Length: 332
Image 1 (cartoon, rainbow, N blue to C red):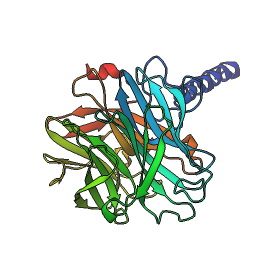
Image 2: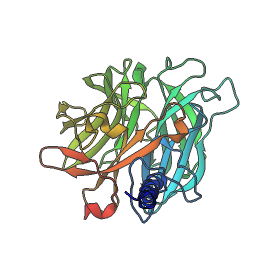
Image 3: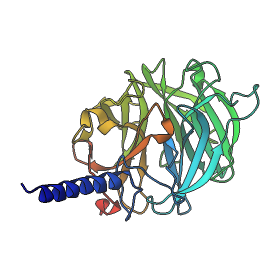
């Protein structure tokens, strides 16, 4: 082959690869979700809201998540707002560690998996999160609770505890159609998954606290479809991805039936490299749910990426198929 032609073709190939890589690293554009891509907020910064969840109030979505600093530093809970789910505005820190060694929330503590729900009766935003005390590693295994008048906070820290005396690590919150709220949490060194009904103000667990199943699972994400509850979890392999599981039940306290792995596509056996965190119901679209997961980067947690994928409500069980990019028209 002529050297000049070869050089030209090589240059074209390199340019094409560069464009593909640039596209993969760019912010979500043209109103599309690109799983694992670098997702920028409206100011051009990587969204820093890991292990999070979303609440929808008065036409706006609010995304809460772990704000991470260099390496594994826990910097509190961040909050972002959006009208369309594609573009997110950084609303700042919803809950911050404090300079008070007497507080459970003192700087150096670990805040993970924050979830916020809105209480229509008290008109308060209630945040629950997994809290580990400063200098104790993951020995404390507590649930923390905070409250705010506004979605963006600031949230006032109330207390931390072990729900009904049980260890509490990875967790989620769920509000049923009747307004009853539940706390789903990994317990007993992550060998048990439990659920507790919350008090009417959503601030404390009641004694209605039940073991869902004994299985080495974490990262619970729950949703309800046609009167049936579905719970997606992951195995426990540290920061490394693993195979997802899905259970279903007609009563939120069980019994829960294991129905396999809902993931389908390349790298499905490792949840596409991610770990479940939340199932988001899409407002204004019937039976539309988004599976949210984190692609953890333990050497620099602030650079962890996000996987958002549509849930296909198949007759046998929900299915989550990998797609390189997609938009909300999927649900049409």
